[in-house]
Length: 300
Image (cartoon, rainbow, N blue to C red; front, top):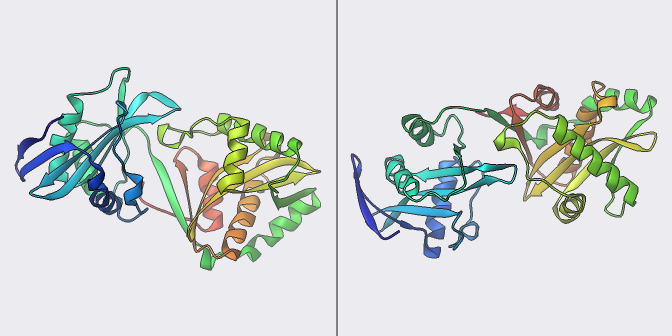
């Protein structure tokens, strides 16, 4: 795509493909667009020759004021492209039309993800005819106020029934890694989800490498058998949790609550200050678990 000028009610924008020199401006624009919910860094953005990934920028004068990114949504949603927009909302329509003019073949859906208080994205998606297909929730917990003592009675009750929690050792035996992967797969099969909450598929080796490289996994055992798990990913002073699963034969007893409470206590003790999590609004059991743990739900 060559440089072009697109006129709008708000003025004139120059549209062009992203260049590496745009990375600091795009990082700032994306961070501002998500209201600082996470921090995008310049190193997260780079030029690519991949025909399935296109990023455009819009500038006003010499200043980059908006960006649009089109890319495959995820391995679990192979027929869909994802549209991400950030910056000056007046530039979204020309950016969108420029991307539509050169869509890669083989995709049948275009999906966008936003939060209900991200006004410029919400306004654009509404005006462009997108429909609200799925809703997900995000939640955060201030770990400075987390008190594991509230879960001691549950822990004692479950201990008397043969349940114990531990952090999975990275040199755990092969049988434990196999059991962990089987429980992970069972959780994916059972949990309600939508495209925004469908993780990319992982092999047993991939899951093990991910945990070894960057995660802390906590498991609940019943007579030695792993029957519940949760995983944490430290990100600076914050941690994200995901993949909290209980084996169906052991559900409705508080196992998910307790194993996640132990994980959060570990995070607090290792000086993490905030915890984040999320999922589809259809997953009512996990909404209840996180409510018990003290998470505060954000805008949908």
